[in-house]
Image 1 (cartoon, rainbow, N blue to C red):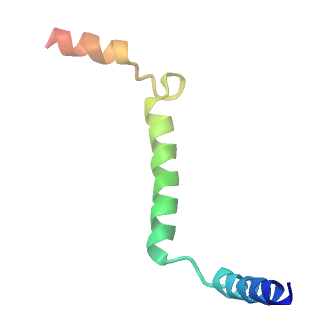
Image 2 (image 1 turned 180 degrees about the vertical axis):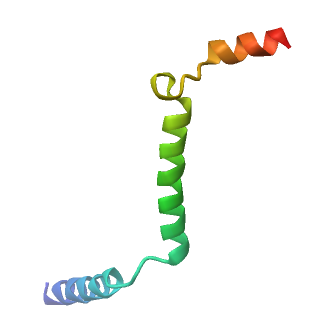
Length: 64
């Protein structure tokens, strides 16, 4: 039983070391880029904010 507890303590110590590492810069760029893209998409394609609607786009394509 004592051996199992020792292994658990070693595992927890190793996990604590891994948690202190910083996030890679690529992941941060992706994270913030997706947030900015989401805000843009929300503003650009919400009818009450931008006035864009699928019906208007369809009618404009038929007129051409």
